Length: 340
Image (cartoon, rainbow, N blue to C red):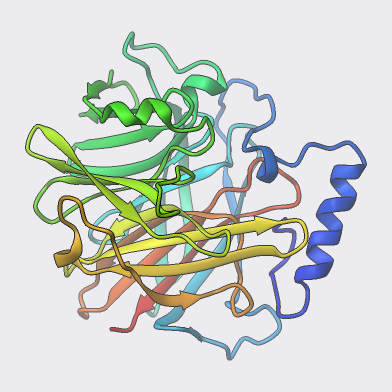
C-alpha cells in the first residue's frame, strides 16, 4: 500500500492496485492484520530514503497544526524487520525504540541536519521474551501493538489476541516481563481490535484505548489506570477512523493517531488531541483535530507516535508506520513540529 507517496487524486488508483493484488491470491496484511512467516532474526544494516511531505511538491511543509521536519522510508535485509506498531523517542531525540507486531524490539539511532530528521543508523532487532524468559512464539502471543515508557529502564507493552499488558525492566533484550493486572473487559476485545493506543500520563498512570470495541454510544472503550485499578472511559470514532497510537505531549495533553482503510476509499489518517484535564474516570473524551493527512501528506499505515521537546522549546512529533510485511506498504518514520 505504501509503494509510493499518497498524493491528492491517487487514492482510487491505490485502492485499485490493492484490489488487484488481493484478487490475484496474495493476502494483504493490511486487511487481515497478519504478517508473513519469518526466519530467526539476524543482523542487517538499515537503509533509508528521505521522503518529502508531498512527493511532487518539496515546498509543501504544513498540514493542519503540523509542520514537516523530515521523513525516512526504511528497509533492512532482515525478514523480521517491519510491522512497526509503537514508538518511543529518547528525550534528546537521538534514539528510537519500537515494537513490531511479530514480537520484536527495534532500536536505532537517529541523526538530524539543521534540526530536521535526516537519517537512521545502528539498527538492532531483538525478540521480546515471555514470562518464561524465552522469545515469544506464534502470532497469538507475539502481536505487540503499543508501548509506553514508565521510566529510564522500564517500559510496558500492550499485546493483541491474548490481550495483556507486560512490563519490561532493565535490559529489555533479555528481560522477563511482569504481568500488569488489566480490566476484565480486555478479555472481550476482538483478536485484532485490542489496545493499540497506550501512553503514560504526566501523573504516572496509564491511558489505554482499544481500536475496535464498541460502546452503546458507538464509541470505543478506553481505560484509565487509577491507583491499583482501572476506570472506564470512551473515545469517539467516526467515518471508519480508529485510534492506532497515542503519546503524551510535554504539556501533558494526549496526541492520538487515527487510521481508516477500505479498498474503495483508500487510506485515511487523522491526528487528534485530548486535553489533559479531560482525562478522568467515566469521561466521554472529546478530542479535537490537529491534522487530517488523508490527501495532504505522505502517509502509510501509521500506528506509532511519540513526542519530545527540543532545546529550542519546539514540540516534535514522530510517527511510524506498520508495513504489515507487505510489498505494497512502507516502513515510514516522519517528524513534524506541533504548532500550538
